[in-house]
Image 1 (cartoon, rainbow, N blue to C red):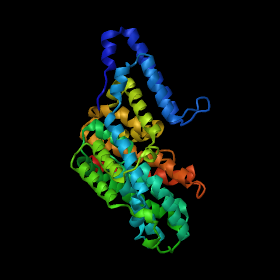
Image 2 (spheres, one colour):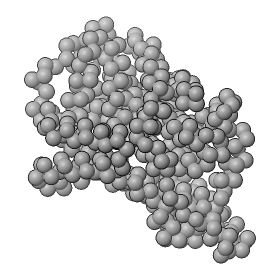
Image 3 (cartoon, helix red, strand yellow):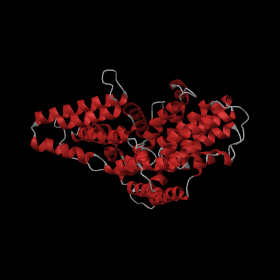
Image 4 (tube, one colour):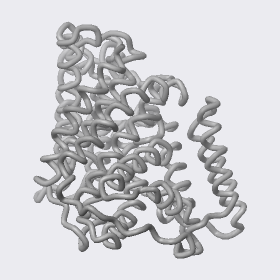
Length: 427
């Protein structure tokens, strides 16, 4: 990821007092942005996260921390393109019913409530590795609720299995979630190389999560399950066209071949778009433009803070205590990143930590570790990741997934998943 150089401008164009003033301004702007992001919406400034990040970006430029040109260069266009393309791809696959078919077939072999619980987690994890965890939670939540209702099951455990499984599975690849997309751009890792490094830890975490699901919720589900819906009851539009399946396979092949992920996904989207021969305005309307704006602005805010050198000095001071070699240093790093991901959100934590991994040990290991920890940290609380919030919001009216109900499982799952997965990354 290209970084602009405000710190060089500080040294060459400004005296010490001016540099200190700009550093203080950058810290203040970042703190304000952090409050707006972490608090989601404040009563005295009810503007939300995207607008909060935009305000921070504007203040960084207005106060002289960055020039407009530096702010433009700070935006990681590869990440924005990949996220945008995956949103379009998911919209088309959902329209064609491909995602519905994949979800139904992935869970069709469940013969008991406990197997269905495990299959829900496994299905969410597998789909999230390729289709972005937030999207998977959007289309799978109604399916999980429907399956629970048809079978007379308590939907709570299955919603938790969906959210936690989607987060865990998304840690496997560089397209599974937004922070991993950023890591792919910043680290230079290829899709397949990252997958093979992260997969053992992800599988271990998923196994831990499934065992915990059965232990925690085994008594809440009934002993019998109704047979799955016959294939002819699946809505006709839910079968998909051959072109969607072919494009999905081609995109996956392109990722493994090391092609540019953003343009590979975009090429697949355009094949579907052209093959449909109709105006795609309705698909563009479903792109989460506010999320793209949020990311672009956040890149600017973090670059402004990094340019002051404050973050680099902080990491230099912390490096002797946190490393990837000693057990104590690894545990401290894991705890620090987990806590930070839940305080400032996993994307800002990734942006702040990534450039300084080399000071803590092998950066090749550090990138995978950062992606895994920031993602698994999202399972800690109901508001720890956007995927969790999507599940809770989509389930409203059918089931009220509470903060405490989720926390009782999420806290244990997060701690044990990290304990199982982190050592495998550092072996």
